[in-house]
Figure 1 (cartoon, one colour):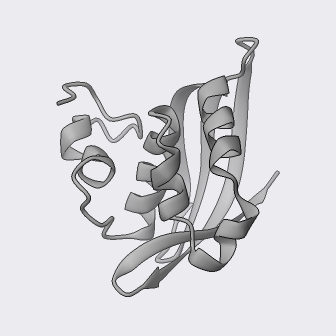
Figure 2 (figure 1 turned 180 degrees about the vertical axis):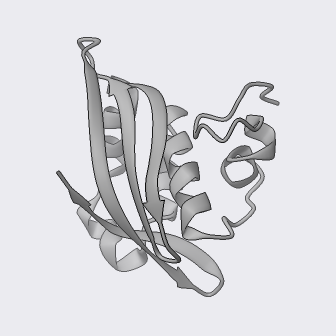
Figure 3 (figure 1 turned 45 degrees about the vertical axis):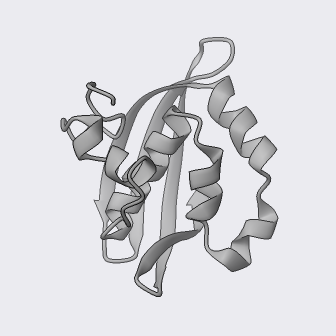
Length: 126
């Protein structure tokens, strides 16, 4: 079991935060919790979780190999939540790319709940 702070910057231990969703198969209770857990999935290179939490009609646009390639090529530094509502989250993800150059990924993401589970639908980028 992990004994480190969660990657999503809540200040909680991983096991008490995103680890509940990534390792213990609990469902994220909100779009914000799902967004945070998806960031942690990138940080832990969990491409299965990222595909599984993508809305089913959108999965055809993603490749597990490409997700894993992007997740592992970068060193994830910090997640900053800018705003959120019931089904949207605006955030910045800070990371070092493969050349160790600092990068910022900005996204305004949309989520949808179906059968009691939250899913990532899509995002607008800058």
